[in-house]
Amino acid sequence: MAVSALKKFFCVGLGLLVLVQPVGACFGPQIFIGTAADLEGEMYYHLIAIYLHEKTGIDTTRVMLKPGQSTLEAIAAGEIDLGFDLPQKTDIPVLLQLKNGLNLYSGSRPLKDLQFSTLGRALEKLNQSLAVEHLEQLRRALSTGVLPATAVRQLMQQQGWI
Image (cartoon, rainbow, N blue to C red; front, side, top):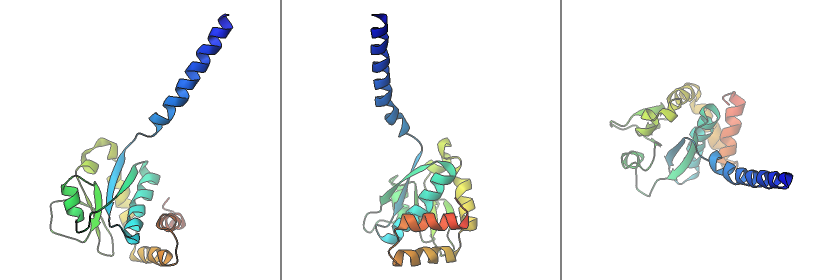
């Protein structure tokens, strides 16, 4: 009888563990990156998303900007944490300056929240490594039908960045 109760207790405990485990695994730091809704916007998203995930463990979500909405407006409204835009006179901090003229602007959360303390250093390292030729290589890959995430990951692996 004691063995039967122990088996029942073990089975119930195992069942609860199976139910609870997936819930605990999906929480963690997450950054919202705003991009244009086009293929190039997706490329820029994956450029940051893959690098951040591989180097820091930070997960990201792509948020497509509304038609006519600028990155700086979306950051000011708190809709996104990071986003690319042309250089502009603003108080919003720049974390990355691509050599093609785009800047990666940041809201306050990535800069002040302790769970993102490694983000700045990682993006600084990416900024030092990324050249215009790399962006051109990505665009060429996209023009041949390669998916943005695949093109970015292949480039980063070929360069030894991840």
